[in-house]
Length: 151
Image 1 (cartoon, helix red, strand yellow):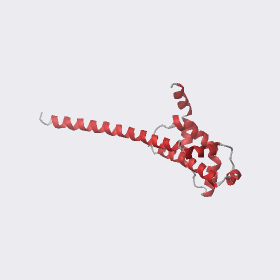
Image 2 (cartoon, helix red, strand yellow):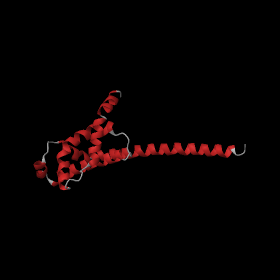
Image 3 (cartoon, helix red, strand yellow):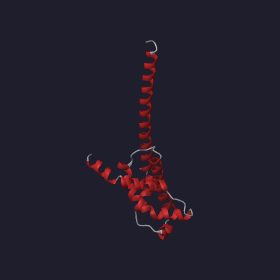
Image 4 (cartoon, helix red, strand yellow):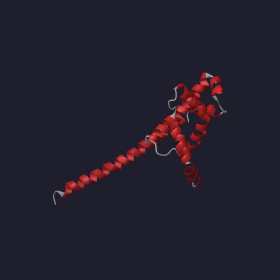
């Protein structure tokens, strides 16, 4: 009987530690999403996304863009790539409600920039995590839209 009390206390401590771990992981993911969301809605990122979506680009029009515009667009694309990396690594679970549609739309507009970067890197993948994010967002499209209708 005397051995049962320490075992029960140990099991209780293990259960409590597990709950604290799960809660802290959930909070960390939420905080990480909020931090990334803050960056995504910053003026610099917004400007880059608007410049990306402002018109249809091809290799010639990209070359004619001023350096500042090209840099803004590159930063916006790179941020989507970072968001995709975090998704693929499991740091973020579900960002599609907020960023799924913008990611799909931006990916279509960014394809000439991605191709340009791939050519400059001699065939190395360019923005692979952005591609991952856009493909996952496309596959989640119906689920996200149904969920938003329920809100």
